[in-house]
Image (cartoon, rainbow, N blue to C red; front, side, top):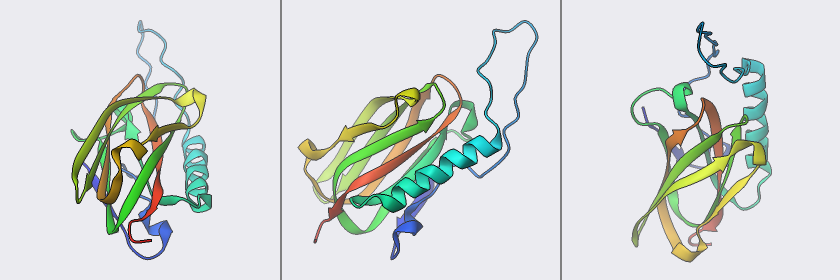
Length: 169
């Protein structure tokens, strides 16, 4: 199910994840093509800790969210939503994902001026950071940003740092 995060007070409160922390088990089926190796929980936790540290170090970050892709995600709606207590001037979203596969993420931003939807942002996980520039959309007073998993070629995890400035700052 979709999880909502609210940014209030300290920046650390803006981090959320769409799925609870859990151990991932790999299943092997005889006669099937080899699946990519399933990472162990320690690898995933180390990646998530690194993503949180990047968020803490980012001077232009106004929010962060993360989620699971493919069969690592649960529920029909695979995504997260950031609700901003104070409107934000959003300039970009910096994605990173865990593993070697690709994930396609859709972005939807709601502001005082309306809603902007940007789908089919394919993030190649092995290539490092992937930035979606939103400056052309002039999102000066965003109140909500949603990110949804629109597809992945294997189970995995992603994080997004939302860049911008307070709309009144």
